Image 1 (tube, rainbow, N blue to C red):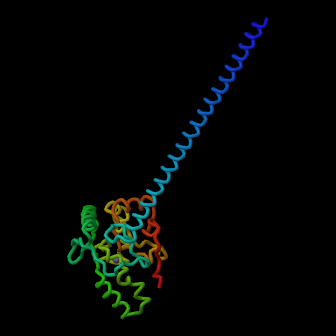
Image 2: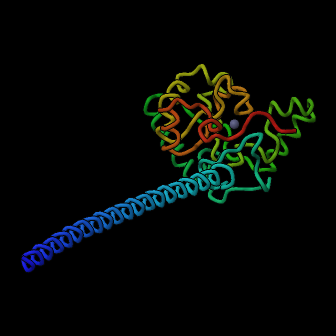
Image 3: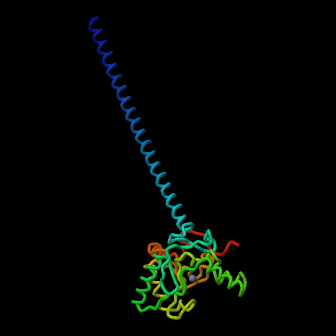
Length: 257
Ligand SMILES: [Zn+2]
């Protein structure tokens, strides 16, 4: 009897021990597994956060580089010059001018695209020529002073850009004519209509559209076209954004003082 009791007792102890071990083992295993899963999730979260931060940093860097190209890099084809953003130093000049017509030059890339555009216009039987291209700081001093002398500063400001603030100083702006039809007359020509349709293919935009004086600082100028590169010109056309100020989110309008 005694032996039987002992055996039974031993057996119970064994069963309890086994059961306890099993529970402990399971708990440990589950706990470990839970710990491992939580660690994985944390690592994944960290990875996602790192990726987001890197993407954000890249976006900021790209935005800063674009701002620089638009506002500070006068050699870029997307530089914005207006009455709020003048050249600094005011006497800046390009170093890659190329002649397009007698006495008229544009920067090399703009000149090549102007020539291609003119050839296409000619093929479409649209007369097209330029009346003005690159103008230096000193040219602009002369023009502006002429207007000040013959009227007053307010009149001069509406007729001509202040020296150092003219887009013609970029070497990327060109004034156009069709035969002898210049200035306001140009808007009435088939050539103007043709340009509105095709100039973007050559990277040109009409820089001062109608009803945008509070944005560009200038009343409509159908004759004044600006080279910005094909990508920008075509994207602006596609998205129906009429001014560089709106496209690049740059301040414009009148002079600050
Ligand atoms: Zn002009």
